[in-house]
Image 1: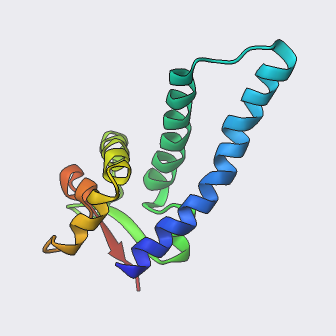
Image 2 (image 1 turned 120 degrees about the vertical axis):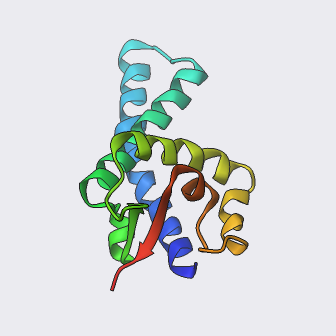
Length: 131
């Protein structure tokens, strides 16, 4: 559990860089060059898609994001393989309310028999520790 939470914290730092590059730069250019400020829902959709693309790309590739590689964790499906695109998007989408509802989906791991997060349980995935 500690390793997964440490990975989650490290992931948050990495995501700041991803968002700075893929979110702030285009929005600054739109605002400065064209004087356009997209609606709030467009900004949230953009964040959702950019972060989703980041996670899905890494999860499909090796089952690990950069933070998960550092902490020797891997995301796998019930059969032990990296998740497919649909499963990845399902897990990613379910992780949003898991985190935004005061971390209740993370706290679920305290009572789960396999110590998995709620979004992993619902998506049919699990995080495993690598040797």
